Length: 256
Image 1 (tube, rainbow, N blue to C red):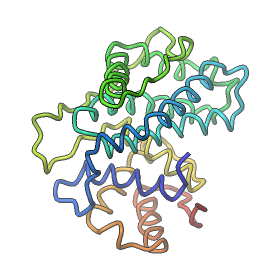
Image 2: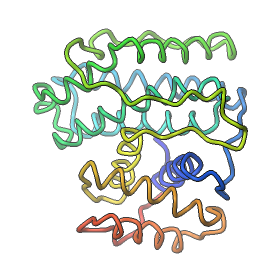
Image 3: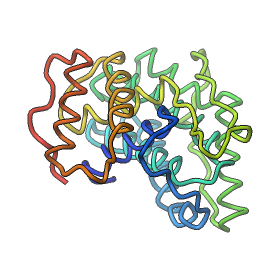
Image 4: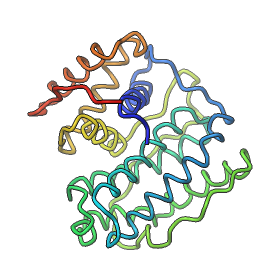
């Protein structure tokens, strides 16, 4: 999994570049080679997350949380550095995992509770939707054709069928100007916000998580991230948590 500090900065960078048209944050390099190099890491994280969710009876709380959040880490990073044609399918997957993070967070990441929770079941059902299946195929085809990296097959017990809420729409990117960045959906923002909260040991509600992610992106869009030392960065984060009405904002910086 990414280091805790790197996760915060990577998440904020993605939100900031997506929300701020005149952002001062550096855009991720659109390098197929860089994406290809992360193919095996991405595939390993995906298989680990799918195994943890498909086998609730053999999964621990720690493994469930770490595996799913690690997968979101990889999606966040890949979406930032990927060529334009890969960002939409990655955005669909990130939205689906965002819903799963929200649902599992509400069960305190308890596998026994999650196994029978209807919201978790709904979130898992999203992975059986056509849009998510097609996004998965697009990502797999990219790694296969552009990178000569074969991704493993999805765990058939991971994407259960059933009723699910519709996934947020992901913007069409080819028509965007080079200066513009992809739109981040509410589910993606919540997923990022929950990761930020978990990093600082702060439990967030869904609206708070969305607010934290959005506000942090806007706040860091007004400064240059690389110009902030850790203390200054933490001050910005604390300010955002407070402005979003979080009752217990972070009081200590996370370890690497």
